[in-house]
Length: 550
Image (tube, rainbow, N blue to C red; front, side, top):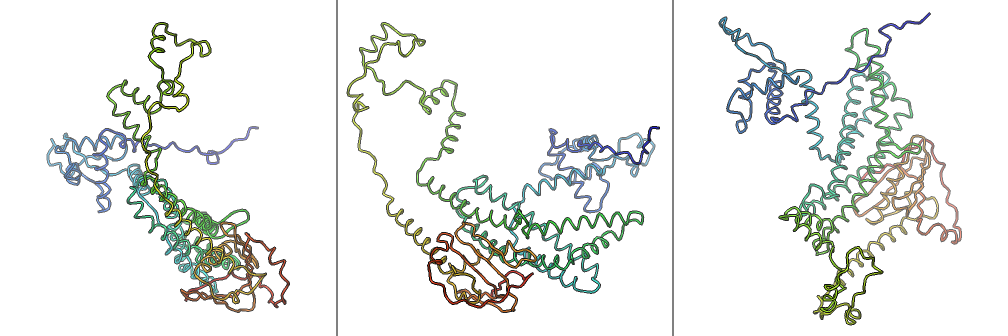
């Protein structure tokens, strides 16, 4: 017996999507159609549903408004034909029987037209977004995670407070991620010198580099703190109940028959949002966090910006720019009056002419005129050309004039070499200052100068980026591969202070082991062993080092 499938259990085919409401974007009178649709959107914001042709005509921009009302009426009819608007008979102004035979309509937006306008608004917003690196959003995320820890510690968490905290956290995280992607895209276009003037770029690059450095510092410190808070929530299995409370509150207004399914779908959405937040700030096995990738991309943008500045300075100093030369040559080809001029320009630009070093004398030309050789004659069978010995020996007949003086760039090179040597020496001294002979307490690190402290912050940020819940010891390598840091948490509750000229950074004490990979441990292995220093036992599930400026 053949089995039968009920219509309700058969898979539904996806309905075909009608894109006719977008046809007006490619119509000849697109400017008027866009104005008419914006007039309906503005009326909707004022809670006006229907508009008459004269209302639409009055709402258009006076500078581009058609003088005749019939043009607006024709545009309305075309939009009705494409499905953007709906026309209904206008019976409100009928006062006589003859009025029923007159063509009077009122118009309103259709669902398809409203959806098309929403899509166009999103397109225009995304096209004009430059994005920004929101350090304030990082602080807001820390605040909301702390609020969730307080709520989760209650015996019966408040669903309303839980829902509000998760909603604000999700909104701030979404803004941070979207704006970061948009900013890095616009930054890459800036680096590629697209849509930006040279003078504007040179004036903008200093502020941009400072902006990137400030955000990178905030991302290093606050990113590690966010990863720690996420680990505390997940370590005690508090996230699931909070997400279920938020899902239940979101599905509270659903119909009774759909309540269970709505709550399950809401919980899946909240779980996906929390998973996205976790993957953004916490690295996993074989996967770097998005915050770490963003930091690396931002760090890599600074040398690229400096390379663009160097390229612009070289261009200003008179060095050739092949792309600019080809653009100029393309304009010359476009401005040439005829094909003959274009062929002459081609020969001049690319050397498509006779060999200039094979200059012949009058006797050779007369001989070639008397007995010409066809172009099809093989090279080996053609008669030779007589070349002057002077031309063969010197390569030229005429005397060359005095050559141009070569610009002396020795002073500029000397200054650049001094700057590079000074920076190299500062980096070497900073590495020597931070290198430890085995594990030591952070409290014994002592004071640091600005260069050593900046290097220490970068190493600490690399270590915190790899810290996950349950970690006791973590090992990280600096971005340039020159330093390695091993960070181990302690369980004695002691604190450490690192003094700098700008202030004091303090936090829980840790064991640190910093190695200069450019030297290795060979020098330390050759040194006589010192007396061992008793160290406390490491603490499991300890948080990574958190430092606060005071």
